[in-house]
Image 1 (cartoon, rainbow, N blue to C red):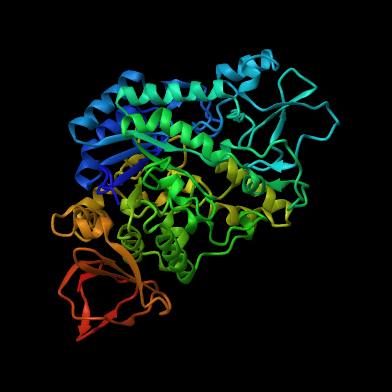
Image 2: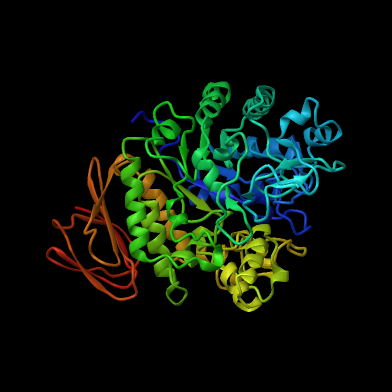
Length: 556
């Protein structure tokens, strides 16, 4: 594998609206991020991915962009952005922004002009079809946020436009070469400004199966999942190759793709030696037990499912590129609440989950608050929910016959609001996030779980992540931790996740994925214990007795 500048780094995702508010309006902003750069540097972060801060009406929290060349006033100004880039550079840190080019906002100038003249230049920037009221829609695809992907074009009774996401997010027509060149111009503008690269949103959706057609309905609404269309769409790779050639490759930019559904054999095309992206996220664990019926029908993830899925991904990626490993992000529930039973969600189990993920081969991404073990939030009413996808899934659960109470409980476990509650900096009013009224309800446990408390305590989750990062960048072990092969160990032992990292040294990573102690046989004697999430380690010759949720990294 050709070594890249970013391979040994640690990345951190910021959801800016909820990270740090500098002016008391209840919304996080760029100045707030700047004020926390030293905090991130102390933790050991190198690459910072910032979710969208472009101008937006916020129908989907900034993923509906109305101006790609400016900063939304709720986050600050372009001067603030320039200062962030400069301050990060001083600290040898790299700023990555979201690249959202499958769709824009219906308030973008392009779509406004398309509405004025759907047959003109800008009408061809979108998928606008003739369809009179009462006629069948061009196809029966279901939006990611539920309901049809088709919406009536404003001021027209015989036109509809396509939106795979929110109706205020019209899809951009990548079949149009003029539109593609506009996108490439914008990407290069940001890279010229000093951006290190992009996280690339929903990128597999840019290629549609054309002409539009129906698929068999998979729910009582008569619609079918967009995933069915994506399985049959051909031509995506031509678009991605052109984009990389026209933009990223010219700058040695760091890019991480949001790719949920790569097909067998495609991985090298995405992240291989000459792939479209530097890396892409491992989302396989997020797809465990996903139900076509909706969130309400999704079952909890078991330790055995998690282990099998992680190992399958590591095997698939070996020799084909460099993956990015995550436990959670802004679109997911909190990982500790998703992968650990609620009654067993403790600092010990949170460290185990973080350690098992962080020590895998690939680029580790920490999501804001993960380093202190932030958890899912409890809401008493659907009226407290902000997330559009949660509101849609709630309606689906009600339609399936669940009571309002059961529907709320079912969907809140998976809600994106879980990851979007304000960052918990301290135990003061509003968790130190803002002096005003937070835009989204805080998690009530912030008085116990916060940065200030954990930084003061040597055995905290924060210090555990700091220890993991230091091992990754240590002169002695970095080559093995970054480039060593992942090889499963004792794969059949239940509720035990263990694997070698084999390189310059042989490291053994072990997590007891249960509340009860269990014995583990070792292949050879322990030379050195590098990381341990508990104060004790019971060993006898070539055996370990691991306590509940104990995690260790040992050199053999």
